Image 1: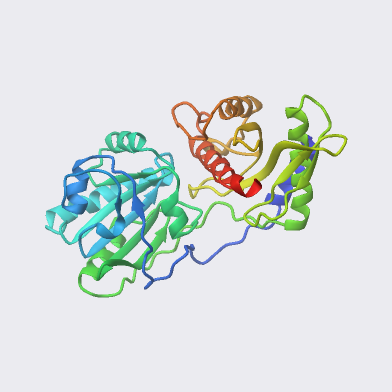
Image 2 (image 1 turned 180 degrees about the vertical axis):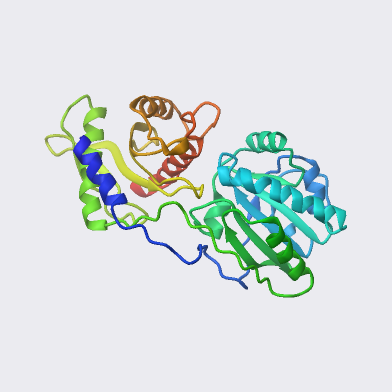
Length: 354
């Protein structure tokens, strides 16, 4: 098994790391940003700041008032985001000093974090600008997988919508960001001359080889779940989103057991991709889990104890809802959150299996 895991890691990580000139999202400058629903803000006072109202609850980003919107996607456990936070706070203070908060709004949206976690982050860092929570990564899905946070977008009001004027992956310094805001207020194009941040690792994925490795790794998990009974895995046809296998016993009878090897790119720009295998039944209960490649703080690898502890909590759940206080591997909260989210997305395909 160790040789097989090593082979999978080689398949994922032996391809040459290549540089890119700039980061990438799903939109270009001048495009209209699709509607993004904000499900909650950390502080009730921020509703009046952004929307001019006191009632709380979800709202569409298009309802945010102002001429310019600085939207930052971050994660409270991302070290680069810790560095960006005081810069955003300083920007917010300058906007207040220059009486520009009516024209310019600032919103930090925490990807994969809960409202309570964001409020804790806000208090710990002494932040006063509005922060919201996006526990299911829906905004990042809409904007595009940048493979790195912080992701800062400068948006300008065009009628009832927000138009993308500039974006930056990684830490963006205060003077550069403020100059971009001033350009938009003056009706000019943003011309920030700063290189985009480059994610720590960009992998190439050899599809043909990887499917064979997936099948074998899923069979190992199936066999462990069934107490050592040899179990075969056959590909489930008709799913376009990802490769899924179904379990078959030694006589070729299908079992109510499905498995998948998943690869989830990081949110933090300093982190690595996670590769893991999990199995579930048609009722959406997770039956087993194993890590193939996952890292913690300082890019230390998960231990066997980390994996088994994570698995025991995951399979005990009726619903795959991540709680960072109880479900995360120590110093691997982001990785744990992304794995839960990937399992949740996979289970959403269950209706296609029936």
